[in-house]
Structure formats: C-alpha cells, structure tokens
Length: 253
Image (cartoon, rainbow, N blue to C red):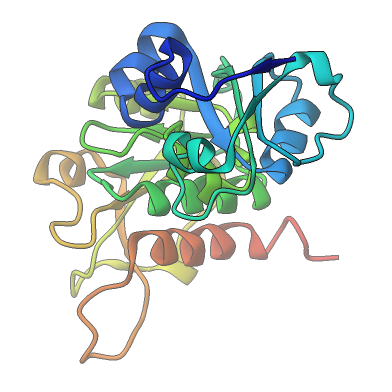
C-alpha cells in the first residue's frame, strides 16, 4: 500500500489535472472517476482500472490493500473533482467502442456544453437501447468526471464518437434518417416520425441546432408543448424524443 500526504506529490498533481483537462485525458487515454458505484460499473464494463485511490478508513471491497493508494481525508477532498467526495477515486482507460455501422438508433448532440446534460443523454440513450451517440464540436467531454457521474456508468458501455458533419453525411448514405429537434411551426410532430433507422439531433438550449445541421436533416421534429414555453433542457428534450422513438416497438409487449 502507498500512502500520500503531500499536495506536491506528482501523482496528486496528475490526478487533479486529469480531472480538469480534456486534452490530458485524450493524450493519455485515461480518465478519473469518483465513487464506489462508478467503480463497480467500470469493472462490470471490463475497463482497465489503472489506479485506486481511497481515503483513510474507506473500505474498498474486492481490491487488495496493496493495490490501493491511501490519502488523508483533506487530501482526498483536494484531489476529488466532486464537491462531496465519496472517499474512493479511481483512474481507468477510456473505452474504445466503435459505433456499429449496422445500428438503427443514434443520438447526435451539437453544442451541448454542460457535462451534466451530456452525461444524462448518454444514460438515457443506454437505457433506450440506442446504438451510439455522436458528439459534434462544442459538446462537453463525455469522459469528464461530471459527465461520467451524470451518465451513471453509461459512458463506460455506450459507443461515443466525437464527430463532424461528414460523419452524419455518411450515416445518411447508409439509409439513416436525421431528425433535428426544433420548434418550427411546420416541423413534424415527434409522434409522427418514422422511426426505422434514424439519428435524433439535439442542440444546445440557447441556440439550438446550427443552420448547417438543420439543412442536413431529413426532417425537423418538434415536441408539442404549451405556447408560452420557449424550450426544454437539452437532456430532457433528448429523453422525450428517445422514449417516443422506441415506445411503439421496443417495449410494446
């Protein structure tokens, strides 16, 4: 067992930077997560755990004590990316899962900057049996600590790709319809769309989808709502559309 007590320790500095820097996560192929529940999900997903860090006195079931790095509680609070650390941190390899070319259900996010929203969409997409999520430029890092926590482990299992519009053109060439969510008067009611092979495109709450992406879409869909409401939270809108897209088939029985 290793025990660290100094903030100046190189490992402490590395873990803190790993939590805050998407560039470092991409460079190293490693991410840092907080909590026993996420640790269990990472192990269940078959991810390579590269280090386990625990506060003094915190039990780490299933991990030999010699494999645990111990920190005093105040140092754990310094290292943890969360305001209320759970006493257990771990680092693991970022999963490399390819979105299946023969998939039929996809989500596309554009400009969704809040990591909590990105994580929530991943969680819902996983629950609804989606085949993968495409993240266009401007989206939060799906492997940041906040996004991973919001995904409740879905980020470990669901294929995610940082994409460009060219990837969506390729999807269309394979017969996948692009449905862009936007509140236009002439847009298609979300309940009337043909959910065969499709990708649901969701933009940020403020600006919505860009004109370029809207122009690529097969159809523009809208969620019916009270006229006095201007928009929905991106994760909520995505959840409604994803549920509607599978409601008539996946759980009909």
